[in-house]
Image (tube, rainbow, N blue to C red; front, top):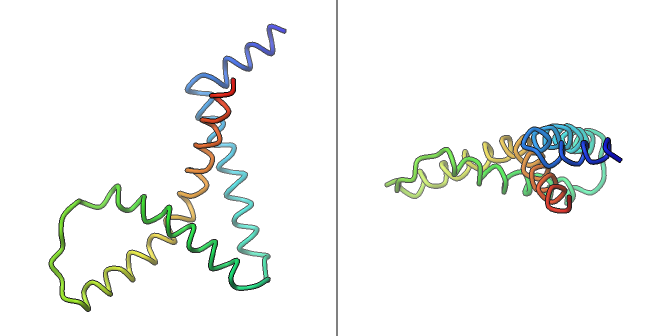
Length: 112
């Protein structure tokens, strides 16, 4: 019984949370990579995955991008949004598993 309490205490600690996030990140990232690599179904599923990556990547880029208003002509805004959209999808491929695994680890710690 003491061993079970020790494992529970480990999972509730900050180090336990980091370990859970790393392990879950590896699992989710591998599943996403396999889905993208081997899934040859309808393009709508691939579009949904890219949009999810874009959403989380856009939020991550907003955190590191300075909060200032840009004065651009219309074509500048189109280029800005296109470049940021592509970058957000690429960054989102790495950020999405982290965000999901962090939320799962928080829920596990709440239930313990």
